[in-house]
Amino acid sequence: MAAPRYRQLADTLRSAIARGDYAVGSQLPPELELAETHGVSRHTARDAIRLLTEAGLIARRRGAGTTVIAAASPSAYVQPLGGVEDLMQYAQTAKLKVLAQKERRLTPDEAARIGGDVERAWLVIDGLRIAEALPLALSRIYVPQPFTGVAGDLGEGRSVHALLDERFGVAAGRIDQEITAELLSAADARALKAEAGGAALRTLRRYHGDDGALILASDSVHPGGRFVYAMTYRREG
Image (cartoon, rainbow, N blue to C red; front, side):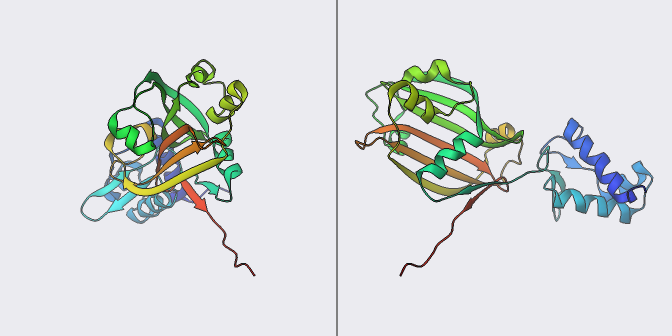
C-alpha cells in the first residue's frame, strides 16, 4: 500500500534538505509553489510541511516564511544529572571530533571564565561533540600544563579526562558546572547545522583533582532541541 501523498512529498523534501538543495538557514518554497512544482493540492503541501516541522527540520514564522533549521531530524541527547559519573558518561557517548588544537596562554576573558592561570600554557582544543551522526555541541576544551601532552592522543575516540587518567594518573574528584541559555551565533550555527539566532544551552564545566586544582575545563554550546538535562528530586526523610 502506497504512503499518503503528503508523506511522499515530505520524504522528497526531507531528502532534498539532507542533500543540501535547501541549506540550513534558507527558505523553503511556500505551500502554493510546492503544490504546483510537485503536482499536488495545497492541502497536501501543507500537511507535508507540518510533518517536516514536527520532525524539527523547518520552522514557520509569520511574515518570515518557512526556514530550514536542521539538515537532519534532531534527536535530543538526554543527560542525567546524578553525579560525576553521569557527566563523565557524556564524554564517552558524545564523541569528540577535533577541529583545531593549539598550545597557548589564556586570554584574560578565558582565564576569568574558567578560573585558569594566565601565566602558564594551556592546550586549547576546539571540537564538535557528535551523537548518532548529529552535531550535539560545539566545545572548547582547556587542558593546563603539565598535562598538555595529551595532544598527541586526541582523535582516538577517548575522552580527554580519560587520557588524563591514563597518561598522568589524575582524575576529577569534583566537577563544577554552570548552565546558561543564549542564542546561537552565525558561526556556531554553521558548525552545528542549526539556525542562527536559535535557542541554545551553554555549559561550562571545571574539573578539579582531589587536591582541588583545576585539571580540565570545557565550554560547550548545544543547539535547542538536541540536548536535555534530566534530573529527579526525592524528598528525604
